[in-house]
Length: 518
Image (cartoon, rainbow, N blue to C red; front, side, top):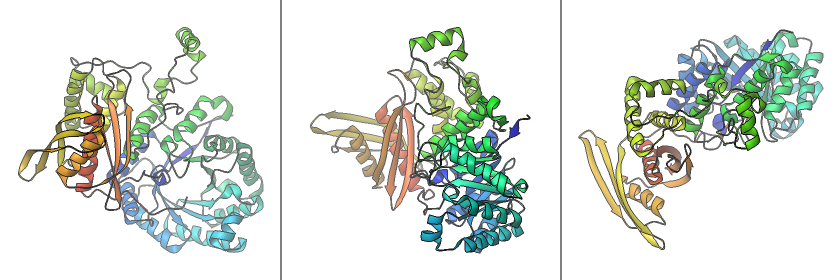
């Protein structure tokens, strides 16, 4: 049997952004969209244009720029949504309008207050209006996994006849099981007479931890498209993880006889990019892209790996963008070696960015004996910013003791139309050194915020590992995120706080959007 090609529909920029705290501005969305094209996804769902002006502008700009993938916008089955989606998508090289309407009995009764016939009529009208504007239409019966199968078949048949070339079957609340999902897909194939005129898609949520399993079951039953997100981010417990479902199909091609066109060596760099932009870090034990995914500590495992790697590895780390062993660089390494490693890790940087990374690399090399791939990745990600720094970190002086407030002197460089000027502030307050630094920054900048989140984690291994600090600051009913790395965790904290404050001062795009339905 020939290998089937499964389409990958990435909804990181739409459903993934609905993760609490994961909202992205336009620059960040563009960065991810470019990465998704390099990754080889077939369809990019860029947003829900009618949800907000920010969503509309993001979809419009991505549609204008992106080539090599279909750009999709979400719309409810009403004229205003559909027209707004088309306005955002009309300049796309390959546009798609994705319309949806709930079909389950619980949604019909309590949310829509519509009969089955009214739902079918509304769905058909929505698809027809979209098809009059755009050649590529996808329809989703929201909460399909809890919809009566006979009614679901009627809806699917009607929307295909109205012009839907793709019919997506969402498990909106993560309720389905693999056996059930497979049976739903088989029922559609058996009972819907015009099903061969449409691609069957699935969109599975992970509330029971079954999103990947349900998506694979759907493929096994005949589905031709999977909707997923990078790192599995999304509403509530998240979505089907792109990297997991892609590598499951590739690793078990003998069983599924299906594959995707994803460039798997781009999985880890893309995962890191999304984690950095959203602030949602990948757990160490995350399949495929976690730090421990290809790590072996048990003696029996190590012995087996030394004799034959296939004893305990079913995939090669190189195939997902990881290095089998850490690359060790030092202070004597040159720009060419660094540039080669940056490229090998999947980052595309300009000459100016490389120079900045190289300067920070040299500073880091004076502090650490060995520099690992994780350190290089952190330097690259720290360099991707769309906000000019009004305040940049220079240094700090700190003295503290248990039971007494810390004494902090913070020095920063202020960049304005008069050039760079150094400023400093001293305080003796706070519950500890981090709080003292935070209060010093507030006093120096005059921007008073509320710290919503503060996280510290090691970038690599060893007692001289860099600390990666991520903070979220609330100001004037919006939240801005800052991130920084340093071998000094207090310095990293100060830089992360300043990064977020710089975003606030620059009036960065609001990160809090109204709730959008799945």
